[in-house]
Length: 333
Image (cartoon, rainbow, N blue to C red; front, side, top):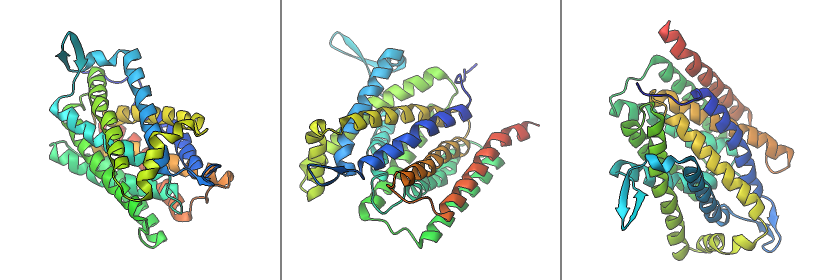
């Protein structure tokens, strides 16, 4: 019989929230507080390379200390046996690389609230969740559809209150790439890893990360070499200058929180139940964390409090979480 994770999915969602909220606060703080040599705050592109590299170091250290690499497929290179992805986990790793690049960027756009970006990036993923389940031949239960409807209403209310998307081009590209990466990752996860076996979780995590983290760093490095105005120079500073910038203490904590969210996220998503159940729980936790982060940032005079529409969306998400928690129990009865 397949073994289940030690904690229920709701507990992983709470831990995800507790790591994601301070992560969002710290990213926006770094992108808002002036960096004296530049007479401005560091941009998201200037923070991104070091954050990606350090969170990768934490991830591989965790895998090594916990012995998770022993569960991965392996190949021999000379006398050494090293973890190796399958074709499926390689594809998932490519999707993960897009998430590693886009998630930190999503918190750094000035004039765009964190809750708004969270609703947009999480909302379109919720739309594709049942599609992935249906493509994989998995049954989507009534409470999952109902929760999805609640989240969709919250998303619609927020966009309507803002009068449309009204986003800078890089923010739109961030949302598109995030959705593509998430779709690929979710499809692969559904096909090969949602078994309820903890050993499969470890295998999937290791094989995905050994592709996704190096690929994300490579993408950023290649972009830094391409001349596309000041943004390529910002990536160049992120690879070289940021290490002696005096901001590394904050970036180190930021990277540790990013690593923690990646672990808790996969433990939610890889639960054997349908994606239309797991994805809203993970997405709702992140959106609620964004709401909490917005209030903290407002207290620090680094942003505005959430709007009425954003709060209404958050309440609908809470209702969705409650429904997803009690729906399976009602169905069993």
